[in-house]
Image 1: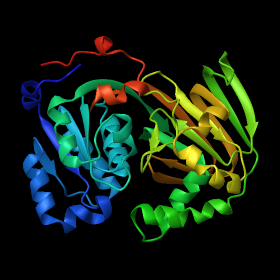
Image 2 (image 1 turned 180 degrees about the horizontal axis):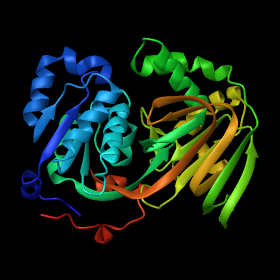
Image 3 (image 1 turned 90 degrees about the horizontal axis):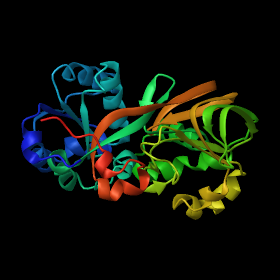
Image 4 (image 1 turned 90 degrees about the vertical axis):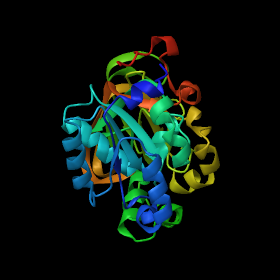
Length: 326
């Protein structure tokens, strides 16, 4: 359902800005900052300095706000989503995104432009989409991974080189990533042959396991082409190959082509057990654990997006979308 500008202007809208996003571009570029604040609707808050502060500030504004907008990258989005859910307002809040970070995977699945000034118009003219989210232990996200890409994320956060260059340098860790035996327990889903199951246990020495309901990693990497934003399932893909072969095949992986040949499952919940599992969610490193539980949160949130561009990642038809209240 398309929102009208008049309806959005009548809503209490708050923009939460990460001042450290995009390698502190918000702090460094005064003119850009002033122009964005001028164009952003509602009130703007750009004081959070840490993840915890962003979560707490989101919780406080959720008491009155009807629309909450995350201005930043995927990490900012994860923190704002966390605050919305901890405030128990996810069924009442409309969520918006203005990309302003080095990683902008979440906005791409919603069909939103990378340019923040172009994305602003969708806060008043966007389509209202009801989407699923995932819960990684106690964290809310759109995507997650267990294995090598999570280890690379952790390595990137340990050094001071930001952006794409930092990710490429951290990717050296992939070459030496050791594959260990793991057991996956899947609940209520669809197996690789299309059959339904209540419970399925599989063993794997995967290099990487991608889990989510959104489709992209940062830098337009179509990592989960078969994921859907609103089908009520986790999308699970196993990359069961040595690191060197993964690197050789990466062009096919980047464009989502190889994934069609890999073991792939849908499930409402998955538990992965194995030694020292590296875990990331929305580009944030959760750490290494011996077990992780991830589950789907169906119809978890109303978001502002571009239905036409996001259509291939949606099950629900336009005329089935819930109409927004005045």
